[in-house]
Image (cartoon, rainbow, N blue to C red):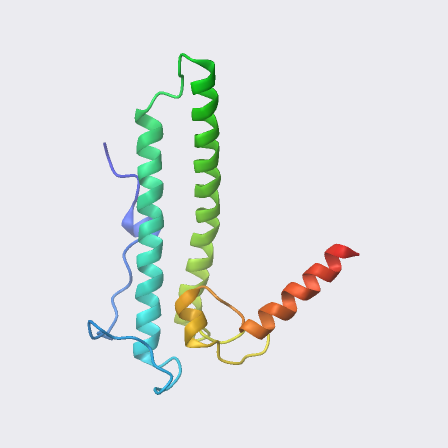
Length: 154
């Protein structure tokens, strides 16, 4: 079966970078914030995450194409359809996640990565390690979520 992914079209291959990361590199608060090594580190993390998601999607597609969805027993069929519904919803969430990964990669290219889109302050390295697609500091995110909750309650 031919691969579903097109590396050039899907952006699965990262662009060539002039920065070479040491194998054991981890961003440190002791260095300049968002220096070329840190940017390359997060670029590679984001690309690896995107590749993983796309590989999982390709696996799901292969299984969908090769496995019959028609089970003879009605209970088995209902169970299979429920499983596939959950799997497809997961893939849809991951599709949305890919757009957030792509946006983070654009922010790296534009020199905006790592800075809060609300306050302009640096986002902590710990937060970026845990959630490389973060666009706000923890404090700004909490304020945003409180405001969302208030507007939902109204």
